[in-house]
Structures are given as structure tokens and as C-alpha cells.
Length: 344
Image 1 (cartoon, rainbow, N blue to C red):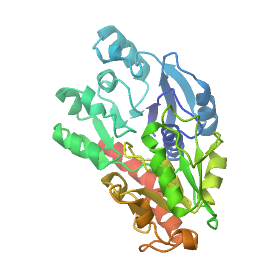
Image 2 (spheres, helix red, strand yellow):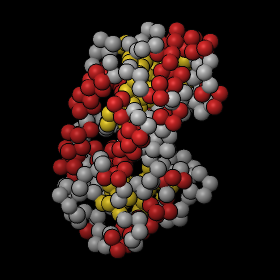
Image 3 (spheres, rainbow, N blue to C red):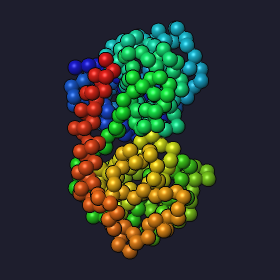
Image 4 (cartoon, rainbow, N blue to C red):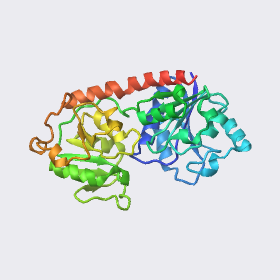
């Protein structure tokens, strides 16, 4: 048994991918027999979701000083701060850094040779940019790449020997597959979710599209969509499970949790035809060329309720079973065993 610390971002919400991944990560490590604590940076942001995270996982969630999310000051070396951080990390054998905008270098230095496993969550935030060559190549550090863009960047920066591919998990077990309803779902209201393209897809299908998330960012709202309030995660999953499709048109992503969740429910996804999605979404889903009219590419789907087979995996039960075999509980725990060994 190892004593493990997961350093997680403070910010979070009911449909936030980072929070979901950290909840599954903590639960999986506990079920594997490890002792797990969750630490969050001391800063002025809200602490609201962390109580629920503690209740869901059974882990102690506490603040850790010496790390500031998104602060340029935290990039500077400071011996006294790092000594204090080292004392806080001293009880742990393995340290997961799961999230973006941390001072990874400071944590690596303060870890004093303990296993450090970095799991970034965004395509646009790459921790390697904040590490020097010495920090990148310490033998106790593993860079868990959630997409091939991160892996390529690790190799480009000379850290290929410390990098491994890491598949994020579906955060729930196998479920009863529901029949497809006559509506679609989209998750997230940030500008990068490209809601105008989501609206174009929904119009081409002739289906209602329900968008879940907070009030859209300025300039993000698109006409023709039905904007829903934020809902508890379980309620969101039930809605996705009954949808004909999940539409997700973002290109600036790490590994979209909503897409993984839809696959795990047997719901096909409509996504851009981009390497980000090709590397983890199987055939039988709908890959759209952004350069061609969506109406032309989706011709015929509205007529049969969006269930017209495209490629091999059109059956919802088959898609559900494939997803849980590839990204389910057993596969995730096996991956954790391997990556904790790589970090030794």
C-alpha cells in the first residue's frame, strides 16, 4: 500500500471534467488498497465543491500552501516556500498532479525524489512549458499524456522517456442502455464549445438540442438551441442516455469528459473530424468535416431519427460495451498500476 496525495485544482462544478476525473482517480486508488488524500492550493477561489468531493470519495480534502493556481509568482523559485511544501508532501509515497495551472516545477522539486505523476487536462495548457530540462527528466517524474498532442510535445522537448499515454476513465459502471429519443445534447457553454456549430448540426438533423451548463459566456450563445440550467451529474447522465446524439464541436480540448460519458452510455457522438477525436472515438460515430456543409454530411439522419448506421458500431449496446471495455473501471485500474510503476 502507498500513501498517495492528489493535488487538484480548487475550482470545480457539477459538470466539470477535472472534478470528475479526480473523483474517479481517488476512488480507484482507494479500491486498489492505497491511502489517499486530496490537496488543493490555498487561494481566494471558492471551496464549495470540495466538500462533496470528500463525501463522494471518503478522502480527506485539505489545503496545501506553496502552490498558487494561475499565479506567475508561483513560477519563481523560493527555497523557503519549497521547504514548507516539502514538509507537507513528506508523508506521501506517490503524488498525482491532476489539473492545469499549477507550478509543476515547484512540486517536483519539493517532492524530493518521490513518485510524481502529472496529468494535465487541457490541450491549451501544457505543463512542460513551465519546466526546465532538469525538472523534465528527473527519473521520479512521469508525464501522463491524455492525447497525442501532449505526447508529441513531450518528445519535442526531450521528455519522451518520461511520457506515457494515459486514457481518462468513464466515471461510472455499465448501465442499462436506453432507447434514443428525438433530441440531442451538448455540454458546456464556453466560447471554445463553438455553440454556433452545435446549432448548425442540430438544424441539419432537424432535432432539438439541449445545452447544459452555466449562462453562456459573452458571445458564446447561439440561436436555435435550448439552454438548460446546470443540473446534478446523475441527472445530466440520464438526459444524455436518452439522447439520439451528443454534439460536441470544440477543437481546443484535452480529452472531453462529456464525449467519454456519452460513449459509456451507448450514445453516439457528433464531433469534428480531427485527430483529437479520432484517437479515442470509434467508428460508428459521426465525424464532421468543418470545411463541408453539415446539411450535406448529415443527409438522411433526420428521416430515421438519427439512427442510420454509418460504420461498424451503430448499435447502442455494442458501443456501450466497447467503451466500458476500453475506458471502464478495470482498464483504468490496470493503467494506474502500470503508470505508478513507470514513475518509480
